[in-house]
Length: 114
Length: 111
Image (tube, rainbow over all chains, first blue to last red; front, side):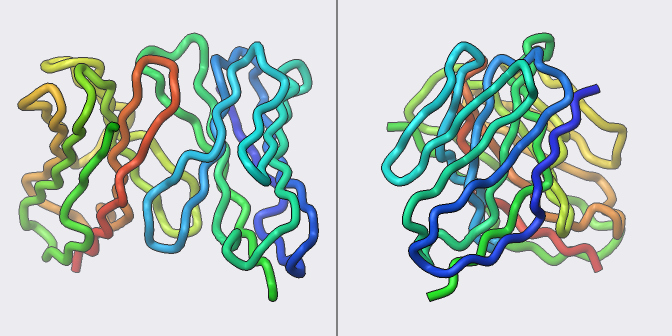
């Protein structure tokens, strides 16, 4: 059974710092991995999707990497800003699951202090 | 472009009352549709998914049901709500094995 873990559960950093969020998974038979952002009381916003054949994806100040063999993904945020404060979730889509169902981690709650 | 609408945003319902949450997707056809629930401080749990009309699968036994009356409409229902049904419900869509997009969620409180 796939288990997705995100460490740390919460992170507080000063503005301007570069930071890394971690996501690990136990079963490497993934189709892809997706990173989301969730603001309090809101839905999920898709940030980056990495296919299993890819090593990384970039969007603006965000860079996500994937090492499928070791079961790890990282989300790198450069020059963090207070507006980056949110919960970040990673989710995997398994090869053997029909329908594109996602398995989520518990999330990392990020606070960027001015 | 594609958009997903989910309503209502918040709902307070008494125990034993019925429930109907609606989700519609615009700008695409034959999407995969999903209902997830997020309990406080926890990750998302998949409740139902649908790869087409009349093709709905339940992931966990529960007091809820789902229907897909139209290609881009997904409804989450209950005949009698329980206190344990409280939570944050999220609708999502995707094309097979591609990026998933979520609605803004419904905060359900059963009292």
